[in-house]
Image (cartoon, one colour):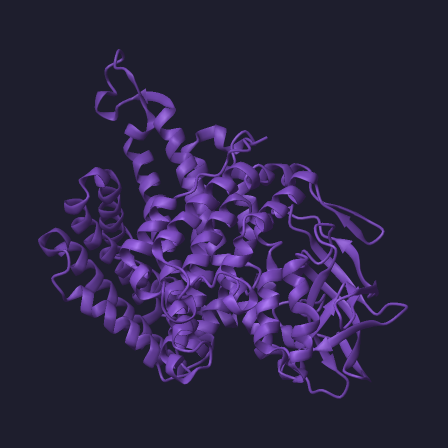
Length: 604
């Protein structure tokens, strides 16, 4: 079994992103809705949380994999260590971090909350996904009626009720609009639901006395597709208007899925209304189900991208420690000398290549995630989602989300193989956490919208809906950096590589737009390549800017020289090894062909 001390956080790089690069102490903290928190308090919060998670939460990682939750007669029992870890999350005060001050929280900006979430999800992804109650309460606060707020909000947070998002059905996976779960209005604001949902995360367990399900269902007489779906608040135990718990609401877990990984997170089949009614309340008393659910979906997609990044980061740091300690073979330059001393494998060029590939990508993904989170800060400062003053920033956040989810989940899975490779044969054993990281992470490319769904969302919605204005605005910032003197002579080659990659990306996007006149199938063929390429240019841009900050900080803070040298090395490696690949990607899009669509099914 892997060590309970599997988790190796990188709080130093989280802090670099938040406080040195993004400088949230000046741009976010103390402003607008985040007026009650300063940088000192923010730093202390992260430092304290790191220690709590290492000591109390990380040990549940391996335990919940080897002793997963147990289903019996519709009830799910969690392993004791996992339950204690979930309780620790609430005891740590992290839920208050995410709540606005008017809900009794600390009113921290999204950037700080997502930095804290990286620590939590890296320590134990299953624990992180039992924390949806806080998000559900915020959604009800934003979209619910006053009566619904009075009914649920004090109790979700005070009594630590956990939330669940309930979309998928046996015949409606990615095609959410095919959902069949029905809702019938029975008067007095009440609805009765009937149907079966599948692959629902943490929808039944014994970690809290109640679970609040946010359920998509189709009201009687509603039209087909996603526009006909509405969102309902469906508690496991009925909640009376004064907050008193009533009878079981006939939300029954009829199956627990047996999975490849993330076994501590319960994946349920839920049955509603079988034999007796399951009651629910229409969120906000409006039929805008998908629009409302996207408040949860977008948070979930961001969380999945953060999870992938955090997993790669801790895997890399585990591999790094192993490479520093494991002696094997002589230095390559002394290979013919039989008496040459054995060296730690970090001295071997190929091991260094694999380590730097992980390091640069992990730091690049963190840069992308926390840059996106900083945009969310500014959206809230300017009035929040759908506020007129925040419209441009809101559109930028929407553009970045499929990159965070799609790129991080795909690339992390690919690079975790290198983490394992650094361990040699030992990496294949359960003695080290890498094999579990790989099993736990693979789901990230699948749930909350597969990678190709993220690509379609990026190209057909986020890039197209404003005539390309948002993507062009972002790329103009990249161009500005590439053509500047940022970092001086030290970063001249990196700025040139960034500029060349940007030109390749613009060529690629132009070619795809031309191909669209021939067939939409070209987006199907090339969408993933485009998503990955856009993400790599944005990450390259951020890493070059990181390197410029590191060069300045090295002069001001020579005691942290090794960290800043590492930032510079990551940027240089990424610009030299990753960005040139966009030339090939651009040619592939230019040469996109559809003959594959003509191959008979029998030929496959």
